Amino acid sequence: MKELFPLLEAGFAANKMSTRHKLDDLEAALNGNASGAFVDLRRAADKLDFAKVGKLLGEIKETIKLE
Amino acid sequence: MNDLAANTKILIVDDKPLNIEVLSETIEDLGDILFATNGQAAIDLCIEQQPNLVLLDVMMPEMDGYEVCEKLKALPETKEIPVIFATALSDENDEAKGFEIGAIDYVTKPISAPIVIARVRNHLELKRYRDYLEQIAFIDGLTAIPNRRRFDEHFQSEWQRGVRHEAFLAVLMIDIDFFKPFNDHYGHQAGDDCLVKVAQALASSVHRPGDLVARYGGEEFVCVLPDTDLAGAEITANTLRKSVNALKVPHEFSNVTDHVTVSIGAAAVKLKQSMKPEELVKKADNNLYEAKESGRDRMVAA
Image (cartoon, rainbow over all chains, first blue to last red; front, side, top):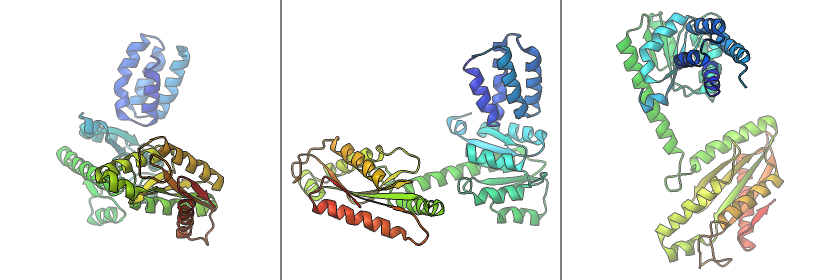
């Protein structure tokens, strides 16, 4: 999970479409945690609102207290 | 996605996410797809990510595609990025306007997948060839460091930048001591090997982004050091000299020591509009002459 977040953050910050493919990995890694925020994140990613995705990623990171 | 495509970035610019999705799915095998939904974001992404190609919508709110293209072509860091317009406008005047401001091609919406794929693929290939040609045009064939042409271009650009900011600029002229006797006694192959080693040692001794070591001609090299006063130039010159000494390339026919050495002339100025670039190079060259005359294997700065 520690390796996945920087990849996702960098990919979404650069508006890279393929970063969305890694969301399945994040969902699996979260294992049901922060599920509400993840649903919002997936929706924002589908709408190509990557600024919101970045914000939600930060919230998820905070929720699961990833160092 | 193959290796070539994996190292390719294509930026799609459109204010409608659905259009981005459609285009992205069409060309996703040709590269990593980036997107922007407005003109300013597109320009920022181009500067930051340096995509290999931009597919640009014309009709967008605030800044339209023509304006984005004009701005990209005006910026030194983005002017070489090829732009293809992807738009619903099909009037030939619109097309002509796109070409006039620097676009390389035009595709009309609704897009035809095979046509878009073929055009994007062709333009990516042309861009690769252009980049390759540009690269070999600026690299010295023997030593693989920048050549005289690259030096001329870089020096001019740093000079102009320095004049704008009234900054210091330093130049070092570097010459291998007793290179003719080296060549005469060890042969041209050994001479070439010596040039390669010295060039690589010099080039790997400067590290700041604007610093440049180039082959000036024959056994002569030149180093450009932006934002560097004479004291800084002296420090770098001595670092370069030591890097060549450390190679310990044997030279029995040198009059100063038993291995290959270099002499360096250093000069630096605080730039002003009234100065001429060639004067700085001449000053460094005069100092190199002084270094040679006063015994070689040394640096002279003034």
